[in-house]
Image (cartoon, rainbow over all chains, first blue to last red; front, side):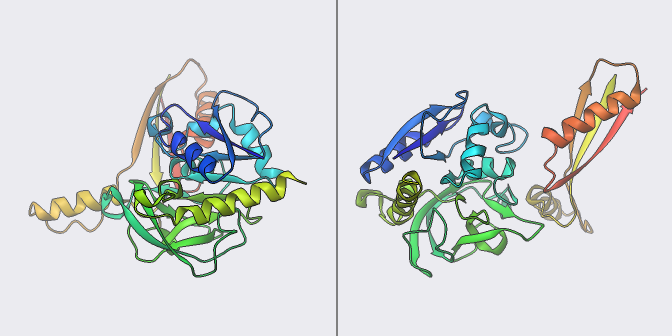
Length: 217
Length: 80
């Protein structure tokens, strides 16, 4: 049961994600974006950062990294795929999640602990949460404003307030099957009490439980 | 050949940069600005003789990378 954490040029949360997964009893390994195989991993996380400097649009260039073909086949085979912050943006650009992320309303760069509410528990991100459960998780983004003109997106975690203009107050969305999810706040930064919240564990523990459930198949 | 591509976010989708600049203009006393949207322009210099072939090549670039089909439309001008 292991999770590949992809490193793009400009990723900057990969070590936090690996640390958090290991602290929760999971296995995690870094995988360079030019690698074409995910080294036998059962799941993948695209971490936060600024892949390729966000050139053109966030995630626009990262989606063509060699590793993305493996990410796509993992998604299609029903394995857990999670994008956090910039990883969420990459999954949208890749068409693995609906919609797109644009600059926050008022161009506000938001970097603070934020309250969110779980609205759908049948996904790899929210499997361990209760419906309606409120969590405190840090948000750290400038382009976290999710838009979904087709209105097909499945919002699985919502902001309790409206920090950035995101459609349906979406903080996290998933694909129809629930195995691909993107979350804008950082659950890996809320896993130890010294970080101010341990609520991120609920999301990552659900993800790891989903990894265990699918890796045994 | 020289080609200009204008990438335009669809009108139904918010443009936070445009809205912020519009507010700044209002703050500076420029009244009456009802709408302000910021497009992206990309200039390319491409090998090729046949304008239509070049146009199709650039359209393929737009579909694949330069524009996001969820948000944006594009307009290609091939300069003689």
